[in-house]
Image (cartoon, rainbow over all chains, first blue to last red; front, side, top):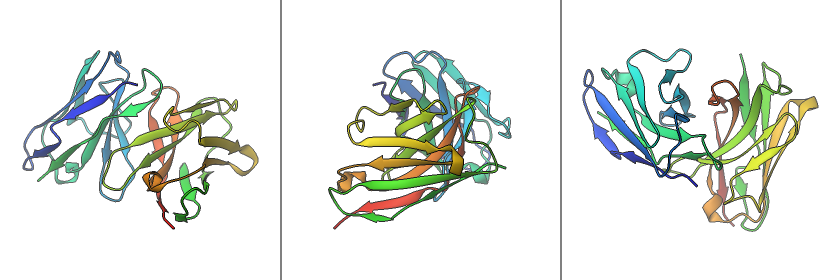
Length: 106
Length: 120
């Protein structure tokens, strides 16, 4: 199975700062990578699909790039509601897998 | 507006079968544009895909669970179900049902999740 490694595990930032999250795949997933945001006590919600395409209703401050094995999620200027856990997810190969998550904390 | 809601027992004994149902409202479950998915999350840990079912009835399962898992759909009731046999404490998790959309291939709608604890 494809293992997704996210770094850092925790990112401590302040509102208004830029957040850069990394996801590395153990083998190429082409651009078949998505990012999800999860807040405490809530289900995840999709932010980006196809590595760089924002899902419906997702603000422009969220952006993604990458292909193959290395991917980045960038939040250009953190809003208070952005402090959460972020997961990358690959759909290139069965079984579908998720990364271990990056917690963005204040 | 599509809504998904998990239901089932919150406590299951070791070696028994975990059975959950996801009720879909506000939309059709009978469409080739979507598949229906179960994902779980042990307390304080990350997400694990369990499996999914297509409208055709075909399924994909996580190999780590495949020998113990079954997903089925009841289109007349707009529900789909998860059965996981021979559970152990390692199966304690929040179980989510979700819809996978076939254009973006993302999980675009989720239930709120249900905590299932495996304990005697």
